[in-house]
Length: 125
Picture 1 (tube, one colour):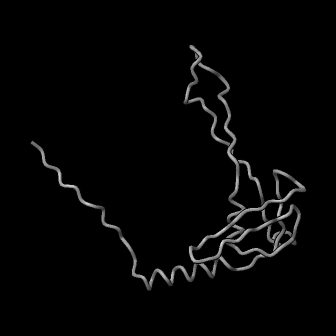
Picture 2 (cartoon, helix red, strand yellow):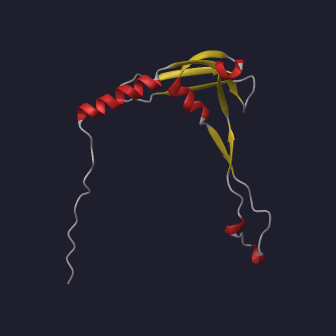
Picture 3 (tube, helix red, strand yellow):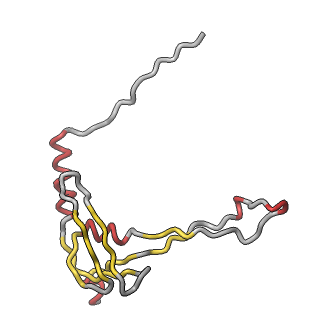
């Protein structure tokens, strides 16, 4: 006979005051305004509309950006836009005998950027 005692994992949390300070500094960095140009690489000449909320107490915002538009956006949204990409999977070039695909010969997933926000200080230099 075997007896196993199960315990809940102990969560490591920080004190509420320290948490509030960290959230406050993150909000300050997130809300810093950046002027730049938006490019919609997938549909040039088109527009992109999305809803966004990063912090749980913030209101839900709907943002509409047009390709080639020069605008001011918070740094958090700029980081979000520049990390938007689509995955393109490729079939292997050769199929091994028996018609089975060899997983070792699979091509890696290619990431293609969908949108780009370029700050004005980069554009002017």
